View 1 (cartoon, rainbow, N blue to C red):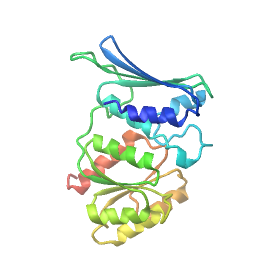
View 2: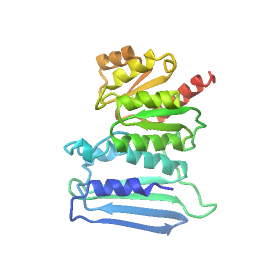
View 3: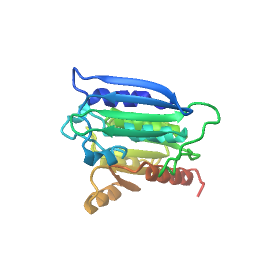
Length: 252
């Protein structure tokens, strides 16, 4: 329920060969406490407040093919909050390892912990289907699973041409499109979808690390309805998608 695979993947990813990863669980005051600790690269103090931001990457010196863009921890936090739990992360700093503590209700009737700033701790009643387009498998798969968690049907494309094909095959109402794709870029994906009479009404959201006025202008000229800059706030993303899905379904 707490998605341990994400926590273990992160620990393994940032722990060099010869390091150690420890996993433990115990019942404390009616709460199940799960701990994942590693002896890896650690987290600088300046980054600890931002590790739960979507698409935040702690060590940008790593090759992109070897690292995710940080969507795993936001997904874990969102999922745990929806089940009445909390997640905390600690590190002594660079090369000092990292420890993640997850607490979840362990028995019927256990008091629910208060979780600050989690406006989506109760899943919204989502409607609609979403095409997620991202060549980074960690990002695409985790974002897809997050959307499924709150009620969307999803399909994932790894490049622009696959996005066009999946849009034709599955008829999604919404598409989240990374701009930096390995074949045609996200702008070209948007232009081709808008040029297709059967796909022209899709709600298109650009996800990108670039947020200057010119970047936003290019996205809107290509046909995007929204331009979101990484790191993306999960609550804002879900609000946009819920409004878009309701509009696409005739709810507005």
